[in-house]
Image 1 (cartoon, helix red, strand yellow):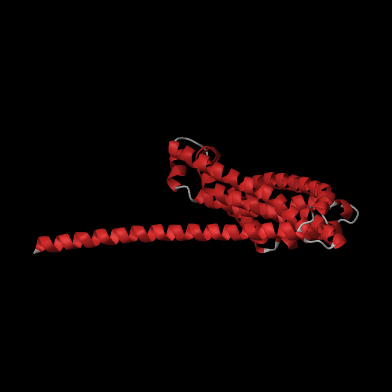
Image 2 (image 1 turned 120 degrees about the vertical axis):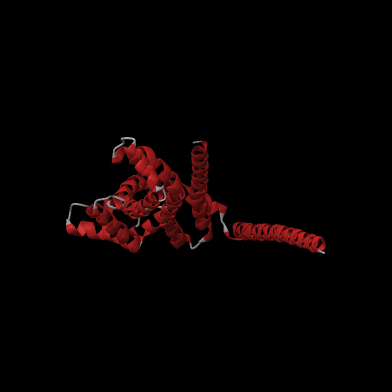
Length: 277
């Protein structure tokens, strides 16, 4: 009787496991199917817009000014990324400092730049700073520096918070072990903690840099001749929104997609390197 009960129980468990596997496979198939349908719908909509709304003659006419805007966006992105990541590392290190004053200043910095809109920060830099020292910063030449300063200050706060999280995710025993080997605090951070923290923070930092690319579009409010400003100029001149919009979309995607792939690649290499040790 006991053997019969045990056999029935085993069959029930096996049946339940098979049903679970089938349900998981069904959900995966359903998810993949819905994703494919959504992608096909988007592609169909894009194809319809290009076929019915886009003027290739106008595209050829305005393309040179969009190329100039694209190059300008690349300059802003490269400078903004280098400066924001560099500054963000120092902000993150200051945030985890044992000195309460240093940590407090870093925390206040992060709270201000994460707690106020980037658009507000752009206005403060573009209009506020020249007003403090009239004649020192000619406003007609202040658009590009404003873009670099605003993006650097804003995104350094997010990078700093990502670095702080990465450092805090490293077990405390790592620092203690490094110090017990005779390393100074700075040596321990540089040789032991930061390499691990960087791996842990890489995804957040990479995602922030993708956001930085898109944030360049906000510079249209100060008439920086970037992609969105060119769209506004062309649309107001010829009343054709879709042709410049398609150009702008292609331009941004040509930056964000490779950047996202690069971040994924760096994460994969970083994980492989971590496993190898």
